[in-house]
Image (cartoon, helix red, strand yellow):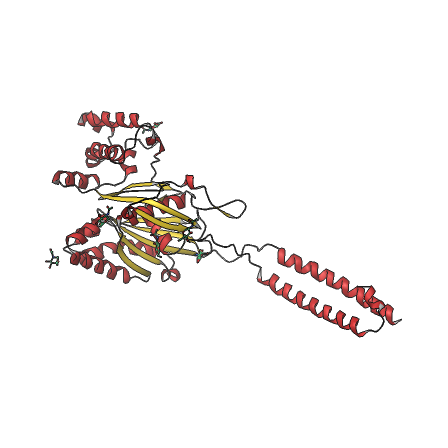
Amino acid sequence: MQTRLFRAVGWSSAAVLAVLGVAVFFLVLTPVKDAALPTRNKYGLVFDAGSTHTALYIYRWPADKANGTGIISQVEVCTVSGPGISSYADNATGAGASLKPCLDKAMAIIPVEQQRETPTYLGATAGMRLLREQNSTKAEQVFAEVSKAIAEYPVDFRGAQVLTGNEEGSFGWITVNYLLETLVKFSFAEKWEHARDTEVLGALDLGGASTQITFQPGVTIEDKNTSVFFRLYGTNYSLYTHSYLCYGQTQALKMLLAALHQAFSGLYHNLHFLNLTRGQSLSSVQATIRQFCTSSWEKVQKEFPTEKRDHLRDTCAASSYTLTLLVQGYRFNHTTWLNIHFVRQVANIDVGWTLGYMLNLTNMVPSEIPQRVTGLKRSNWTAATVLLAIMLILIFSLLTVICCQKNPSGYEML
Ligand SMILES: *[C@@H]1O[C@H](CO)[C@@H](O)[C@H](O)[C@H]1NC(C)=O
Ligand SMILES: *[C@@H]1O[C@H](CO)[C@@H](O)[C@H](O)[C@H]1NC(C)=O
Ligand SMILES: *[C@@H]1O[C@H](CO)[C@@H](O)[C@H](O)[C@H]1NC(C)=O
Ligand SMILES: *[C@@H]1O[C@H](CO)[C@@H](O)[C@H](O)[C@H]1NC(C)=O
Ligand SMILES: *[C@@H]1O[C@H](CO)[C@@H](O)[C@H](O)[C@H]1NC(C)=O
Ligand SMILES: *[C@@H]1O[C@H](CO)[C@@H](O)[C@H](O)[C@H]1NC(C)=O
């Protein structure tokens, strides 16, 4: 009689335990549903204070996914009117004032409640590098004024600094490889995967007053001045990077360069106007430039009737200069030329140092591969905890019943 009672209690407890166990199993394994909460965006602002002009880049990404690639978007690029900040050497307050229209624009884009947490940087390149060499007092005054102007806005301003040529090259390299997902890729298998080293791209850049080359040479670099080392997503990168100041010795070259960079600068822009960025052979590029440069002014104007006269006037100089830089400067030949891809943007994001700079300073390209954290929905977690507690109580009651009963047959059923 007593044995049968114990046996019944035993079986029903075992059944309840089994059901609870299955329930906990499902609760824990049910994937987390996308939260119904609206995705919160984060914003970042980077001023690119170049030698000829300043631009403000406004980036946005979902707050919870910053470590993935392909999710940062460029919301806006605001071009500051007037010259680069280094031109305000004798009127430093003017430099600060010039940034305000773009900051106003950014404040209109970024929701008020997010402005205070928006990291904001100003990076200056060759123009300020030169000014600092000429008169560091003046450079400091310009920096003080632009910092003062930015600090008047409710953003998380993290400072203005001059980037070294090597930094400019390195951050450009990070931008390109981040956007092309050659550093790390979030695969379809929902895992972070490395692209093979050979797929990492080099970066070439022509700015207003300097040009940078950065690539992974695959051999040890003896000269510490041209080597940079960093660890991204668990991989060590040892890069060669070199920045050349373009301002030459002669006044003529200075004037030519000043003219080249009035419109837009860059390898892409200088060749794109003549439709030379589509992967043509070096001979065909040379032929097109030669033909353009030997055309009469009347013919050129007829061919490009809508183009601004100034731009048209400088096109021959700009494209010849670019070709000379690549062939005689960087020594690209007919074969290696075909490896150059001229791009202005990748995934609607401008290729330049600004994104890489922000990614690095906000720790969005970590040195180790991020761990994937699997989350449980709060309600599932609560339910699983309650069920586990009930199971524990049942197990304890069962054990108590079993050890307190004298009839050893009670052990058989379990
Ligand atoms: C640098 O600029 C400051 C202030 O503008 C001036 O007083 C100083 O003489 C300049 N120094 C040099 C070396 O030109
Ligand atoms: C590295 O840079 C320093 C300072 O600019 C210079 O004195 C030195 O000669 C450079 N070294 C090499 C190997 O170019
Ligand atoms: C990468 O660099 C770190 C130092 O930052 C070093 O400890 C590690 O051994 C390097 N790994 C490889 C594979 O070279
Ligand atoms: C540019 O080049 C491509 C092919 O090289 C050609 O199809 C296209 O028509 C060219 N565009 C202009 C505006 O010349
Ligand atoms: C990125 O920033 C860190 C400081 O946050 C710095 O130590 C590191 O050298 C930077 N990386 C590059 C490539 O400049
Ligand atoms: C990205 O991952 C690193 C390392 O796992 C972490 O420290 C960092 O906070 C993450 N960044 C964001 C914005 O989530």
